[in-house]
Length: 175
Image (cartoon, rainbow, N blue to C red; front, top):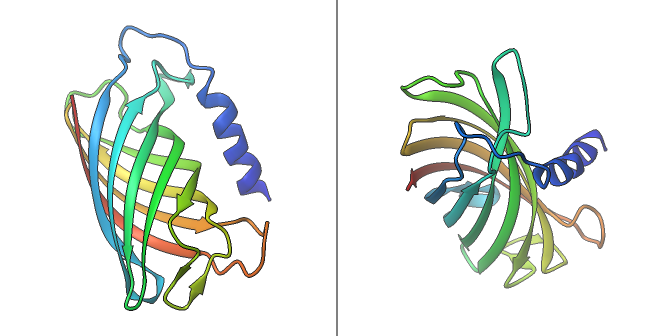
């Protein structure tokens, strides 16, 4: 319940950004691959747009974030699913203003539309599901390398709700 409430807060805060000269809006393309439960292979291509500035700062540390729209392909032994998703994501950088790679953590909650409700032995029971994520990464001015845990579920809106969890590695390029 607390996680769901914090993700709702993520949606609310993501719309209240302020413009800052040292945080210009950036776009990026991101390619990801990984594996989900039951040996389901996952491939993802995303477009990312950073918030126009930090949401809030304290002690020279800032929390910012980005919006991400993605297409994913889940390949199981018997079934394949295509997912279209959109998520606002909060990001906390540990070395704000550093010129080299900056470590960060991210947390997000979004929505996804699935081409099918089943993949192999999993039944998500709904084409509309929530996409939650928790990740760690390193970013420079142009490159972003990320390891994240993602979970897809209908949050108990319909049964059965098997859900699908996955670990992914991502490489992003900002322009």
